[in-house]
Image (tube, rainbow, N blue to C red; front, side, top):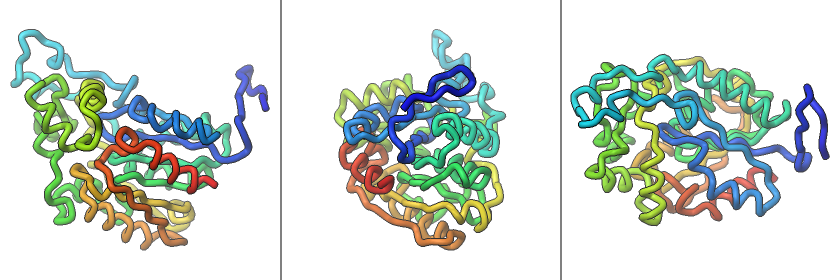
Length: 291
């Protein structure tokens, strides 16, 4: 069915809830390409979005491109995205969900630190969420910022911190150096250890160097009346080396403390990035949630 709205023709593939795909820190809408094909094959319409400070909305520090490369300048130059917060990114995400779903409730799938933004968005506009699906994601619903969980016992053994190349307090971002070949093995180990090497290499090359520190650093209110009214599913990636499974399970417990209904939990024996390593299995989970 095709409808006209403000001079733009919107194709509504069917009357079921569309799926909105929200990437994690340093990633972009590009990371969902293998999954969107699987969803399309199952007849499920999906839209992958870019969060503020990421993908086509990212701006790299100038020092990233300087030649010869100056590590000291790279480690101290303020991030162009330093002003992005969880709240500002959530407001932008709400607008994207409303546009892509034509005002209808959507199934929102949020990965990793994208879960922070989706959590804030669900509090802002619960009517736009048919379901919030966390994929190995941060879900700060207990009144503390996501950054506090990074130092928690459940996060012990994570391999992301060793990738940082600047002090977040200095540059306003969690800064990686995707252009450093010497760091590719560590990045693959953290994010993509079960992804084929060519694809993992391509993904690392596409990473945004700056993840805005204001996303994990902000505390925002969560209420049972708004966020808690949204149905939740949590996909635990049991082989995750970026967000350990123990931390993922802690988030499930905390979500249940503020939600009207228990969280549906599904486990996948994958790395942090099943959208690249197991897109067919991930699509099956999303299709089941949406049905």
